[in-house]
Length: 247
Image (cartoon, rainbow, N blue to C red):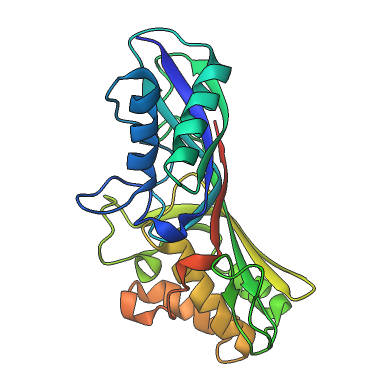
């Protein structure tokens, strides 16, 4: 059976996350319905990352198998047509045929996330639902300094959801960088894989540093506590984007 890879972007506000769930609107189910509508096949697509409810993507990747070969430009156009007619805020940006050994989840070598904080007094008018609005001034340099405490290989139990299903809390965080561009504070995180809620937990903790409530030493102590209760508040889903997956 031929296997296809699709690259996907979506506004996650209307979805209960990537993963198909009973009686919940999910990105996975929306794309699977669109595939069925164009070719009549019932498929299960596998995504590179199971983004949470409200989380967005500019570079999600998924794969699926079909019983016959199709032109890849037709696959993308047909899926998009059915997604649009259903009113979904999801689009396939690219499609290609891949070897049957390709797996969108397990073949990935790195995942890259971006978290955006709109740091100004005025509420967002144009980017509502796609940023975390924080009115109090944040020190992005202090946040970046504290973020470096968290890079490398650690037990991230403190920054892991109690609902996380990963077998181990030990992960290697390759990049955690904080920069400011005008009113926007951007946090970029890169790793081979992440724990459930890890990025949003890290961002919520770094916000405390930016406000002056915590120092880099406090962040280090929270990490070493290996205790979920030591984590700062979990940042809302609005500002989080899955930007790219490497293979």
